[in-house]
Image (tube, rainbow, N blue to C red; front, top):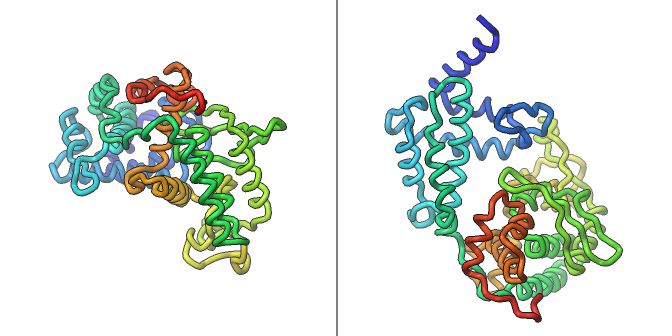
Length: 369
């Protein structure tokens, strides 16, 4: 018996007997650059946080299957659709389109693997995914509404400057006000997704002699890597933050040290005592900080953006970085860019997002261009 066949049979049995554990083992071998054939063995692996997140998606699906006494090789298209319909959001309302899309993407990815190793004859999620792709308008059915008017981002940026002054007066010797200002402006000025902001490192930032800044976005699973240019206010905010950041001492937790975790070099840092209780290595805290893990970075960024939106009178509980990203896209559309050019700026592989937003965009006044 060929060795590869034996491995496939062993893997198949594990997927049928314990699909959650099989998913965990399989996920730990994947890289974020690997294509569907799984050939890029040298690419960086997904972080532990990402693997845990995807495992939680699959585990929830498996618990739903178990409640219906279904094995993974018995799943059909109707089961996938029924599971997505069962997902709930706030106040027991149906889950958002974005949430259902995220679960569907992982279910489709797993069944693609199961089909490749012979556990299932076909991918039951393929038809569901294809149907949703043919109905792009539903992708935004429950997304936050667009900001009121094309001058929203200018007001947002002015509020970011006011909040910087306020936070600086409250923490005269603190480093978080400079970080918060840079965070707020990079979301508005470049329209980056939350996951992209999390992945930025100092080397992605280049301050140019003309006062602008070049940001090389590393991209993410759903968006392409690309180069963006920011205006002088963002350049100054990033330059100020980078200068302060260079004076901070990174503190690793004892658990990170024992597990020999990779040392992070994130652009945006978080307070050390927010990362891992009080087990810190390297002395007292003082002005020390810790690398921002993806989940912490999301909380920090979202909190900064929501406070800015709240100060502008928006319902911050329901609006976050995606709200500002949509506003960024709206400004590009109102300034005359085509759907294809807008999609390139957003890093999107299709023009669905640009086309969905275009129908809601007001013409941009000359004073706002």
